[in-house]
Image (cartoon, rainbow, N blue to C red; front, top):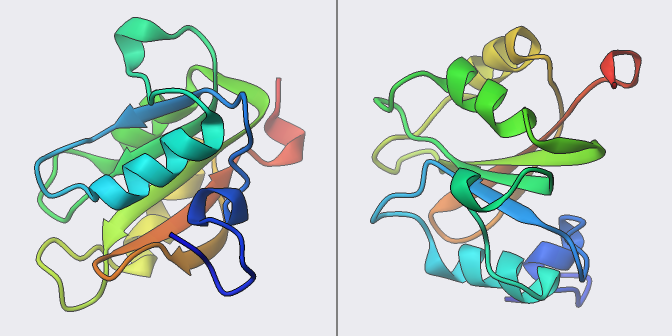
Length: 138
């Protein structure tokens, strides 16, 4: 999957070879194209909590109606490296389970994160990049 700049989606999102990608919130509607792009750019399979102590990237799937976004984000940052990022994938507007940008903006600071940008990740999913503010890093 190529972006307008000729990079793969995962490369444009900052996923590099050797990155450890942790996934949370996977379900049957999660995009296999996005998952595959992340795994290909990292050069290894995406992992879950049972397989990793430290991660560089958390790939998080969330839909309106899922449990609790704040709790999921807190779980996503727990194993991240100091420079790690969270990519929150949510259904685009008009798709079932769409999450409003206001909901993400409200949940992020409570979880200890800041929203930096949102991108179109696929036809059905958008990605929001979340980071730990520099003053809050370990």
